[in-house]
Amino acid sequence: MSDTTFEAMAMVIYFVAMIMIGLWAYVRTNSIDDYMLAGRDLNPFVAALSAGASDMSGWLLMGLPGALYASGLVEAWIAIGLTVGALVNWIVVAPRLRTYTEVADNAITIPSFLDNRLHDSRHLLRWAAGIIILVFFTFYVSSGMVAGGKFFESSFGMDYRLGMTLVAAITVLYTLVGGFLAVSWTDLVQGIMMVAALIAVPVVGVMHVGGVGEVVSAVRSVDADYWALVGPSVSVIGVISAIAWGLGYFGQPHIIVRFMAIRSPREAIQGGIIGISWMLFAVLGAIGTAVVGVAIYARDPERLADPETAFITLGQLLFHPLVAGFMLAAILAAIMSTISSQLLVTSSALVEDLYRTVRKGELASSHLVIASRTAVLLVAVIAALMAWTPSDTILALVAFAWAGFGASFGPTILLCLYWRRLTPAGALAGMITGAVLVGLWGNIDGGPGGVFDLYEILPGFLGNLAVAWGVSRLGEPDAAVEEEFASAVRATRV
Image (spheres, rainbow, N blue to C red):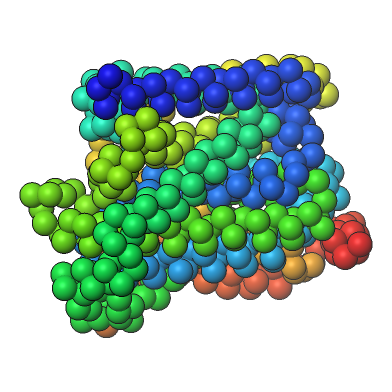
């Protein structure tokens, strides 16, 4: 059999496994709480790997190794910032968010938590947050489908639209039928595939070259400054901007919703240990892949034309075609895990935060589950139509999304969890300020000392904090809000 046949076999096995997990989750999903949060019964191992897999996407296996291959360890600052941000997120946000969302009238989405936490009688926070999620994540999902289509186009020569439709159909299928439980368990499998592949490539690559010493010598002969974390091409603003990526974690709905689903605040700490361990192995594996790539291909464009294909090319060089096929599947897993998580959060915003606000009265749980599945399909169709003809505009908007979510939601979540005096007006003003600053700052270049080259998440984040604090100081939260805050603090400590 040809190499392509073996690789296609691996893809089929992977796709069947994802569908089977979706069907398994379907029979265990009976209520809206099950569909949106798996009944808050996620064990820490699943929650941790699900958070990691839904976060990293194809950037971890292609973008990061490619950048490190081309430029050296100076490109590692973003990975450092993200790792530190993820660690702080698990320690600071996870335990208290798990507790507080239950205290705040069992909130099962981020917008409903903000609404319930601050007793926003006009539901402006819920609407604002729901619309932000709906708009940005529709673009995010679309970009993931574009990545899936291009993956099949470049790896198998398949028509872009056919590949995109295949990725979209299978991801939508298991997300639609199995909800949060299916997304979390498929993320678990996908997370294991990703980290296993990222460890295997550099380990076998080092053996292929002849040992660690040979790899180091080969890399040094190609680029004597490869191991330097600073250099003439790296500015102070560049380093600060890269590290600032870590601030985004506090406001990413598809990541922090995992904290709400974990079984208890105590297990959130265990999840943090597991999650950060996974992330360290993954990031070190990506760095190792780049290093081995430099040692083997010596940055020769005739041997490796596109640095972002270093992981794929090394997998095909070092392993049997069937194993290489599963490594290709690991890239697809990274793409699909992000699509499914964002798809579910978007549908939850549409149903739980917007539809339920419009539809007055009590709605049956079965009705809400059907509405959520319909919303998954609706958002997926819109995203697929946007992805049908790839657009630079879509990809450019997605580049803003991490900063947009981080700056608009991150400070608000932190203040909700740790400051009893936050008011609905303060939270809303801060969210709007963060989003606007990201939009403005990201479209201006230069300035005194290159200040506008600073990654827009930092001014947006700080602006949100300052405005939310200032506006909240002008008012007072009611007694019920303060009582709930105290109750959440006590419950977290138990």
